[in-house]
Figure 1 (cartoon, rainbow, N blue to C red):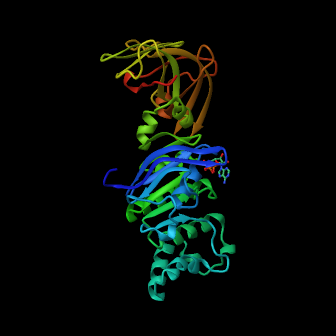
Figure 2: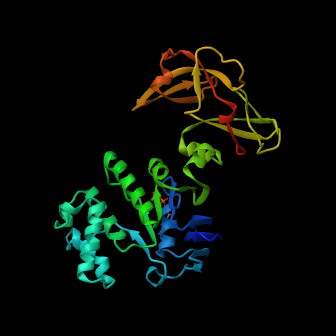
Figure 3: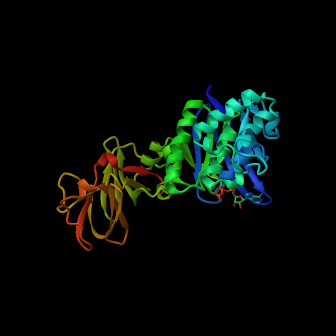
Length: 362
Ligand code: ATP
């Protein structure tokens, strides 16, 4: 355990009856980091968070907080203050009173309570609603009150479970930067459960990707995006073209993967023995299009354009490779200018060898 470890999960398993909801979790949460836990519905994100909060006890293994086992220790008897950000506001209190409530419970005096509540109302941009009843707020405003109420007590850890789910797209993006800035300024450790890739990747220092109760990968957003550790992660993120084949060569000179679309090469080191199945991923932003077969690279094949999609400043071109595999190429409009982008047109897909990433799992 390193010096900056705040929480560690050591062989943590959670069963509900015979159902294995979480299988052998081993990971650490660092002091002051923004950690996002993401994965598809039912993969065990909330159960992991609930165990950390003391709302569920692990069936096996140990969870340590600041070095001490907390498996059976309720939140209120721990030395490290941890708050579960809950949307359940008190309907009989107004906004300001909701935010002041936890301070009152902790015996903070009236003047100080008011000062700290005002500070958080201001930070969350809800000062104008201070005197309103909770029933007079929109879903998004309630979420901001709930955040102010959690943060006013300045916990060491804040646990958040899909806190932005009720917001519209524009407010969601705004709140993402508010949350990220808050986390940076306060240094509070955020553990943030979401199924949204854009939320996790835009805010978190590190992301945990879970599937069926297990961790598939843990790392910085960039690491996970550029070097997915398994085919599952690459498919889950959906931002790479994935080629399956057999490793023909893997030595200091690089890797050659023999696939139905051609022999593709990238830098080493090899992750499997020659002759074994392997997968190459290439980000759709790193895949290029050309009308003529580019010379000087092995990483090229032809495909037929089947569609295009424009989102803001970028376009995604969809192509079908021989054999039926869908290929995606994402580019800025400038980079596509001059290309004959017509449905049915044959184009060459190519990429730089350094942009290929090989994973063992086929
Ligand atoms: P979502 O994104 O849908 O909220 P999640 O990743 O947070 O999903 P969990 O709520 O952790 O998933 O649930 C993991 C699995 O454990 C699910 O299959 C769920 O049905 C099951 N589960 C959760 N709580 C219980 C319980 N109290 N009793 C039985 N099964 C449970």
